[in-house]
Length: 176
Length: 237
Image (cartoon, rainbow over all chains, first blue to last red; front, side, top):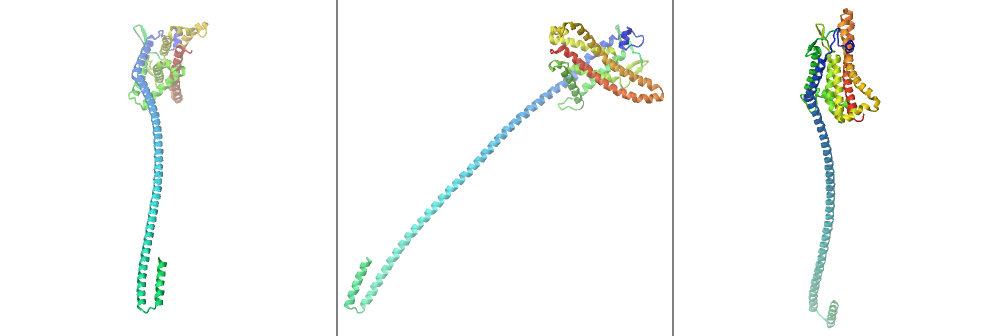
């Protein structure tokens, strides 16, 4: 007992008992504390930690998903843009081609029209020339007859008359 | 310095009233800290919740350093309660001691070998319990004969040595700390003005050191608990 009191050190002089009661009390209080803390403190705390862990995991997954989706959308938009650009390019190209064709057509039509007008004018000119020549000829004949009658009204020798007739005949023959 | 203890006998068992008081106070403080810190739990932790979560992680780290979390997860609550209770107990005796009628009433409960040995016996008892529960009686019995059969007596001694060292290490550190504090505060400080001047800085320094020792001892007790536990429950040992 002396040894134990020396070793265990609690003992003041003359104390020869060991406080088994304290042991039971400590044991019971510790177990009660353990149970209470588990129920009121550690349990909820671990619960919230787990919840947070899940929350973070979910958030990471969601972020990953939205990242992939954004990537997909970006790719889609890029493709759409490229398509639209190509389409615009082809539209411009088509319009240009169409314009060229139309220009050629218009030019050709205009050229044809001009040709036609030129032809018509030429024909007209020809006709007018014919007409004018005809008129002149008539006029000349008329004047000739007039001159002739005037000449005839004058003295006309036989020889002159012959000569005149012959000239006329010749002339007429040439004109024919 | 060498004060008596307020012992009394009840139902044939001896009790130390000071121990009962201090055990209750320590348990109450731990309970209140833990409960107040976890009253308003939030996904975004603030203030005390942060602190308790840090303690939680710290104990988790201790367990993870000794065994697989699959085995050790069940001891998380035990480790948390142990480290908090022992830390608070170690701190209780530091600010002052209360002596009424030559009886020491206010002290660290862990400055009593009966208390620390109770905790140690409880821990060793739990290691045997979980050893049988998790690995089966056969594998559990086998640990006493591995790696060599003739080591059996040593293994038996080891169990008692573990219990004694676990309890007495804590007791010795805390008791020595408080003894020196009481020598300084109640002894040296009463030897006139010079003694008072000399005692003040020494007490200050020794209190700071005792805080350090108390913290370290709480950590060591929890750490060793998990080490002994892992010896019994981990199959790779």
